[in-house]
Image (cartoon, rainbow, N blue to C red; front, top):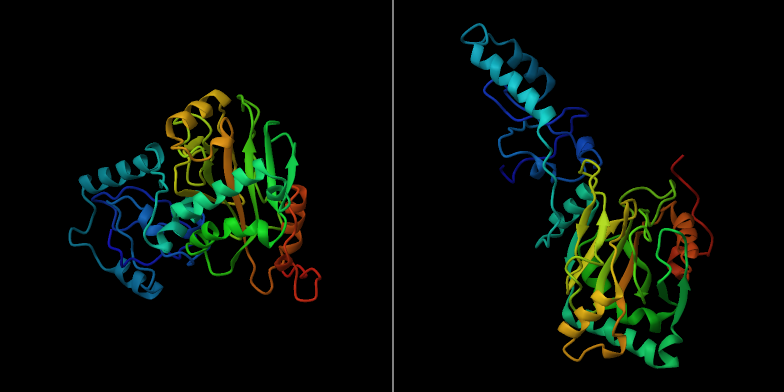
Length: 352
């Protein structure tokens, strides 16, 4: 479809394959799971056979067009058959799901994020190396642990072998900043880094040990205002079939999709996306480290290390600050100063 198409602003309308008997098909933003008229990307999800009528056509023009007599005065049998086939296909054929991938333009990344709930961002290798060195320092010296606080056994959604090491101050946040800047460049300008941690698993994650959950679940936190970014730190290459991210895409039909962790890629997902850790064994990660270590991170051998970065959109009147703070406290994360307003009090909920 032409890139010049504008987002449909109609409140209703189900996408159906075009046929000789269908003059136009509308795809609404509510069907896309986005705010009406907000993201100019919904046309990218339309099948290539669809024709989208411009929303600029006035109701008067539509009535005038509909009142014009058809040349044949009546629809032909072919037109009727085409219309019926199009309607049946729209109900029977599976809906095409958008597949997140690395995007050159921030707009396309945001479209992935708002359509599926997940997007991918390229992170410079130096940023990953800084976090890997930080993880090694934490395991080898007491000074490395002074900027982190450990939290484990958070709830039943996570395996017992997994622990979070949260940055507690500027020194602890510094190794995460290069990766955070790369990710923020793809998000809206109001997003800020509010927490960062090394997620370290020492042992297996058997089937059933990790359950579907939302990172920012409270209803007072809306969609599109909080996001988590996960990227692999050690080993350099994760096992192909273990230890990835399982999630339920918003534009899917209830199926579980696996997103692999790849070197230099951050998996960024909305705080309202249901996800869990894909099962894995310690042996698989030991084998991956032996195969791809290249002499880096040897002190981390046998561990699965991810960097976790939490971002929240914080415009001046962000009523969800208190709820975000409570979520982070529940994870054992220190609360950063910019989650409070200028005088250190909560911003009142303006949604009601």
